[in-house]
Image (cartoon, rainbow, N blue to C red; front, side, top):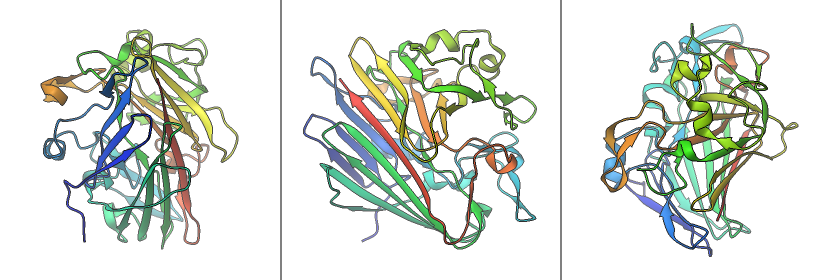
Length: 342
């Protein structure tokens, strides 16, 4: 039986973690995580009900694709052909355009996965020409949770024609569990010596890679997010916070720890592992209180931080950025692990 948009599914482990997601967008609705003192709280920014989530911010906790993040002008060359996608974020294409994967109803089935206490497979078929991308794309995402407190997202996709792809998940974390408290006071470490600066002319990355050393973008040692977002650094001021892709320090396709988010009062931590070359860090700069979130609390700027594993923004237009092209016979694979600590 086909899923309804509002259908919800729950992953649980034996340490008190419960993660709920909906068929609509595969969106993560809540993540109940204990504190160091054993107090449980929901550490995801979002809404009290699925109905509110379906009407609210389209990206809270959702799966994004076919191409997450931005492509300049929605345009790129592929095998000598110019592909023109929808433009839905100022001058650029963002997260699959006007009807991205975050708005699709995914097929969901519960599965058994070795070493996991809960697991679900989410599938979607994106027809040839969907979102103006070439090729029929078959997407398979597995959500799983284990007793190491690891919430894993495993992506796979295959195409019938050469296309570009960059899938990610877009949860905003606030490890206090209280939206009245700012995530800017969380401590963040990022295993990255470089980032891809935003070019104000194109409003995203233009092929440049810059060192973080000597700038507020340096999170190679732990520091409060507020220290960066309150700086007068031009990259920060341009977007009123962090909305940047970091070039993580890792070799090839191996899975490595790329970030650690820590909230010292509750004792909760979030470690991020991935095999992807980039990590987009976004501090919810555009929130202005007009959205009403969980427990009736307005969603304000810096209310949560998104840590999105990915290929670099605008990669299809820059040969020095990681390859985003998927061809027939190949398989796109992407692993992301969020490991909770308390």
